[in-house]
Image (cartoon, rainbow, N blue to C red):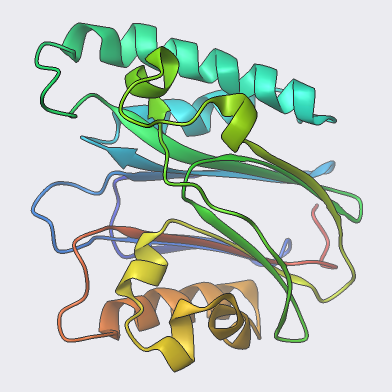
Length: 246
């Protein structure tokens, strides 16, 4: 299951209590986010990427990360994301670096998660967000970095951060009823009402009900915050732990 530049579409797996959606921002370009989800007897895997200058890097990232093995240590995650970075550079970006004054080569922030038993495995680089809520309170909020994977990170240019420095790798124990929210930064950029949305606790306050209800609630709130919203696209994946994954 995947979304590639499809706006305003809600995908639901009721057995796994997981759902995801992507909505377009105000910018005239096509949706640059990508989401891919895989559910089987071993658990749930999901990857979300926020692309820049088109969706090519984001699509490459979600395909690559879900084809790779789930890392069991930070060094493994660094190696996997490093290989992705090199492939984005060689396949998508190197040939577009004609004008170094214009930062327009394909790149993406990427976050990959896997639920194995009662543990959430996280590997992330860039400014996508991840939140685990317990009883509508923040249990874990992932650090985010203003950096993106592509030519400039590979070459160490334009203040892009090295993978070893910026990569987040976590193994988070889950309890039944915990809610997991994976999102692109369009969600919080759209959220102008600070009491409701912009803080992690504001997000956690809205993480109740089924995964489908959470996804739709957050996506709709993102669309209605502020006067006109923001230019960026918004993608959301929600999961409630404790449901069957068969």
